[in-house]
Image 1 (tube, one colour):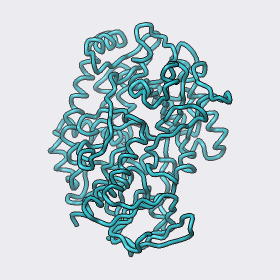
Image 2: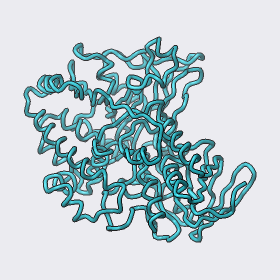
Image 3: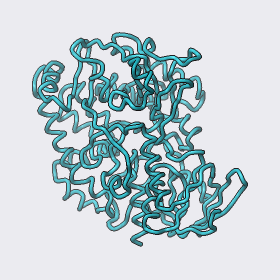
Length: 505
């Protein structure tokens, strides 16, 4: 039986809400989590997406970088995150740029082969030495009250502040690197989930890059063993073990600033009161629940999930496909290609050569495949397409999705030695194991306004000193989702910070 009053009512059972619930319940607070769907985890879930195919795909969120080790330790989470041996591979004609975390000499030889010397490699090392230093300094502050702008500037140092926080990252990359391919590899981290011109003085791409290089003090993007659902499952277990109540199939209808939350489940409509309400929903959704309005942001990605019978063959005979697809496989993401695709999308057209990147999680974590698929050499494959803003899919969602998918697969095939379609596994009914999701699909299926995977544009990791970046202007209501300051990605940071804001008030 539900109580009528709680010390915290959490709206939304995504991973950030579960982090907040676990911290608060462990501190002895009475906590209720209300989740609209029939399961927790939000977009951090695993699913058998194709009937009769024993493969658990991380269907939406797919890699983990920002989740702090401290949160894992504090909550006693039983999860394993595996570092990928290969950082990236970028096809270039009949060869490619391979960044091998385990073999510096091989990486150097690859740079020399693609760029014609060692200048770009040295520039690469200098740039990422700078971002590694920033990561080590900034990551611990993400779980503390906000630092002010001046304090953050002093913390990261003059060079990093100038090149990451003040100047457009596009200008910085063009200045530091001469090779178009290398420039593009660096810039993709500034554009994941972000529709932006990296040379724009608004610095949105800078903020995106920053969050992609500071994760947990290392910037490593790791594969969650068992799929993304293992992360959310461990968080839900921790919250329940601490005494939090989690109610699924409970759609929140309204939030009153006084603390009352109205919701509907299979038994009808109900209301509970929380001394604090923690909103693990996008700010635009929270505004609607409060009876107001906030413009929806715009997501900008095409997500394609596949199961392959085997890995595609490469044009580069010197690189095994298991190495090329073991990290981030870049597809037509050179500096000029990114700029051209952005211009086409901004003009309302699906890019003629869509930039994208591919990840093969089963190379790092074979456990997501059933024994028969593993024995047969099958693999999962996730594609993340850039510069696919929601505006392209509004008028004809199904038709434009199909057009974007065709263009993206053609873009991928242009850098392979064979069409990826020839490698697709088929379900027992003969259907190819292939699904695509646009921002409009995410808006419809997951309730994300505009399909924006970060809930809104990312913010700088500093602000008004002493605050936690989760405040809403309403005393009883805190934001604990990705739209909070220092939100975005699978991190748990907003959930932790909302819990701390409540516990330290």
